[in-house]
Amino acid sequence: MNGTGYSLAEKKQNMKTRIMFREQVSGYFFMSPFFIMMILFVICTFVYGFIVSCKDAQGISPGQFVGLENYRTLVHDGQFWQSIYVTFKFMFVCIITQLPAGLILAVWLQSIPYKRIRGVLQAAFFVPFLMNTVVAALLFRTLFDSDTGMINWAMGALHLPNHIEWLYDKSYSFILLVLVAFWQGIGFQAVYFYSYLQTIDPSLYEAARIDGATGRQMFFRITIPLMRPAVTFMAVTSAIGSLLVFDLVYMLFQYGINENVATVLIYIYGKAFHGDFNVGLAAAAGWVAFFIILGVSLLQIRFLGLGREKDN
Image (cartoon, rainbow, N blue to C red; front, top):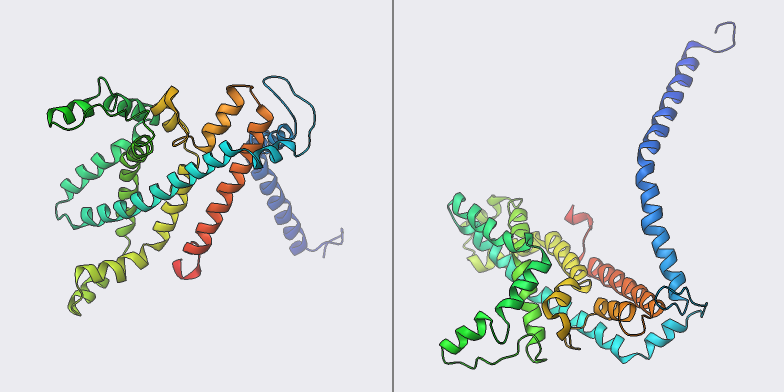
């Protein structure tokens, strides 16, 4: 105890507390640009979007407050529900085609004994994913053009029907959309699954072989259960990406968009920037789409089990 009434230990404790406080303040100071940007460009955007959804805003006109009238309009809008149906159908088809194909492709890559060949194949599969979606859409638009496209030309050379309107015929437009999405997304899933396969202990497969397990049994009883976190992650991200598809549809079909490929974002874009420029209705549709995406993601995480203790 000194003359001031504080012991040396208390002084050290007070100094340590002040240092910790300064470090915390410094940390929040360096993090403040992120929080400011998030508030300005995320939170404020969400709040303003909800305000607009409650107005009859058209074009640059702010409009008058109409409450939930735009949401009631959506309930009775058949075009909106058709876009929801197309979006969910696209999501479902993408998941059931890309996930199994990506996993099988990853297992096949792992079975190749030569590392250089595996590396070349991984790069080749990954290139379409790195390609800009607009470029990929224009590429396939050129290939499937009914007059000058190579697909119809090749079909004619094989004496097959070669006057198919791939981009405008409702019977083929959705198939073409799924095909382009599959071509661009399968490589990323295969490489991701292949990377996750490297974390599985090889001794598990060796023990299974000693017990007489076949390749199919090891795939379904070892690979699939241990790959569940990776499959869940890819299912959630694929679902979100499919629900948010816009540029692929818009650039692939451009002015030939029909109800078979008009997703919910295409609907929102059309309401906001075409026709009567109903920005309020488009904002309401955007909020509905947000909650749909959130609900689908939470349901997938809940039922597929991402984050359970036994997965950690």
